Length: 326
Image 1: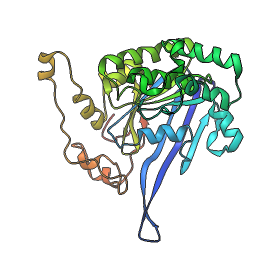
Image 2 (image 1 turned 180 degrees about the vertical axis):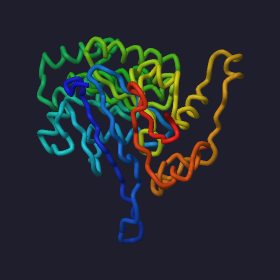
Image 3 (image 1 turned 45 degrees about the horizontal axis):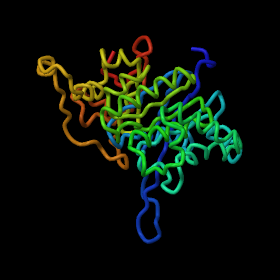
């Protein structure tokens, strides 16, 4: 694949948070939230990132956009390693990378009007002021299917779905090329989720956007994503095209996740195999040696406890981190 077709390239990304104890707050360990991720996002595509709560999905997104400074590794955006950028240079690059937060109730400043919230990035980056600012804010309202007259309202005067649309408009205001969607519909009612997902898909086509779509709802991810990466305890265990993943999952953890997705047809749902994982997700403070998944995996052998499995291509664009597969 040509490098010109890749917008984001993540190479061996680690994000560790120190654990301290005692009066002197001495470091006694690390929370290994992200533990060696490598993947890419093509221009104009949506890459879904799925996994159980606590597996490191949100930390991955925030490390890419540099809200968290990675412990090690590289994040190449348009060929430039942004982990080495600071100050004004980082702020200039970050204009092209925006984040839609999970909670529309907590991500909007209750003291600001909706118009000021959406227009703030334009002011911060010196992109518009005065009449031009008002016109651009009104256009952003229409873009996310809200009435511009709502610009004078405060966040508490909007529903959850409307608040998330304001968050989307804020992310769009500086015309980014990459948007990291951090579980943008998980706090919304199901009927509203569909509307917001449809809006995101329309905006992607109209504005030629690229999405990293973080979620734990596998049905939503299948609907919006071109490719899907599955995370477990800080590592990617499988990544491939969306249809391929759902039709032919190969990693034992991916199979277990998909077996838990409800199927509307009761007859089909009763006949399919359910995979119930034993035990709990290990702590990222003290992950198991070798493959993180081996304590819960029915395919595990002794070598799984000793070596971290390499994410390898088993055909086409299907990558799996399991020596027992392929």
